[in-house]
Length: 176
Image 1 (cartoon, rainbow, N blue to C red):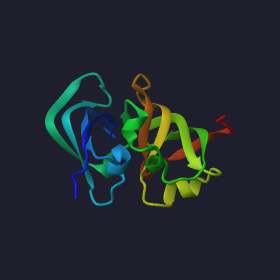
Image 2: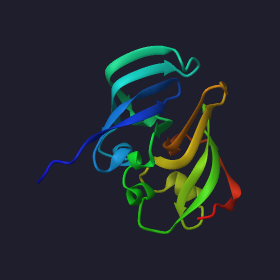
Image 3: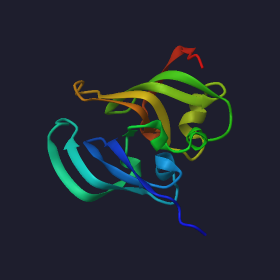
């Protein structure tokens, strides 16, 4: 049995009170596989730099390795969609995907982007069914609700569905 290929992925991660920038070691399943793996409840971030969300440009801590409980993660940004993992794994299957422009909020952050789901949009299925807590959002942006100057934009991100307060959707399906 050959060892799995591993690589480093640069991330920008948000908890309720900290912004963490660093790198995560991922296998061929990418960041999506790492975060949605039910066998681990934490994430190791290498060369982690932390800033408090109310002072996002001021370095508060630096650690060679930071261990973080996955349920505390609100959102995690990557530089490229490829860093999320193989497209079919990220989508959760081999079905025809439809893209929807969405706006969603947690207690701390507001997110905008494109959500891809199989078939018709089903809020209940997205938010409570299955075992994937981290869902991809493309062409994503985030801002802190109480600190509008704190804004992050990225080609792709994963948000933690367990923290979502509400989700609104544009009425039109995006063209393919």
